[in-house]
Amino acid sequence: MKSIAVVIVTHNSDQVLSHCLTALEQQSRQPDQVVIIDSGSRDIEYLKRADRSTIKCKVLLESNIGFSAGCNIGWSFSRDYDFVLFLNPDAFLTSDFLEHALQYMEEGANKKVGMLTGTLLGYDIELDRPTGLVDSTGVMHTWYGQSIDRDQRKPLSVLEKYRRPNAIPAICGAALLARKATLDESARNNILFDPGYFMYKEDIDLSWKAVRAGWTLIHHPGLTVYHCRGWKGRHAVSRKMRMLSARNDVKLFVRFRSPYLLYALVKYGLVWAFNL
Image (cartoon, rainbow, N blue to C red; front, side, top):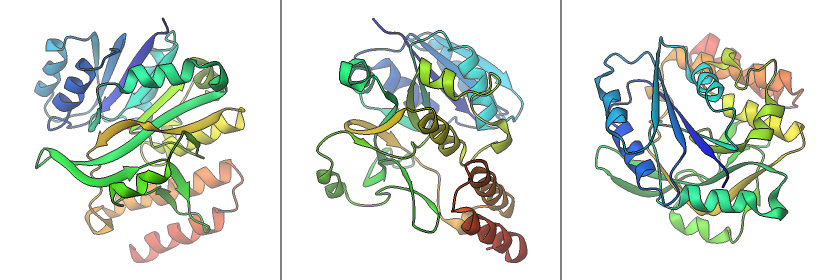
């Protein structure tokens, strides 16, 4: 049987981590290891939930190092596993996710599928129930270069068009399952996620590195994850975070020599000059 580890990076995630771990405990095929890296939470008391879990959890406490660096630490403890699932603490797997994901990845025809995700559905943690809207079916870019989660905020009826697994250019880092070989080939100098991103666009960077290495990325409509995405509109995002996102766009498109670089430069200039 192939082995699988789950890597979760937390930061003040007390409202959601319990839901995330409960969903992992209820998997029909439970993970062999869960690595939780806390990135500078104000109060770490909620992490004791991992000690009471029925699954094997390793908890590591760090300063506020960011999502990318946290994932790298988690990966360093998971490199011997056949598969690694990078999972946000506010993402809750349905009970058959791991079982069916591994079945798909182990099929002979899918050996070149390097990374896999499912359909992410919105979840309102305040009301503790699904929103009834789609959150993501993969990360795409508009014709001018804006990164978007495909089908985000659309009604569930839009999912009827996905009859079978389909190739996508990038995967949302909230629930990203990858082969060991894919991660090994995508790493540079034993670093998987570029820590220079801190957060934002690191999942696209990793996805594109995997594609460049010859792997296929797949959205599987038969796999479901509920995601409590914290995005509440640009008005709720600080200028510092908007600058970080804009800078990361420039870095991403320069690295991959993308024609979207012009969009990124304009975006960066507008945020810097006008706080847009």
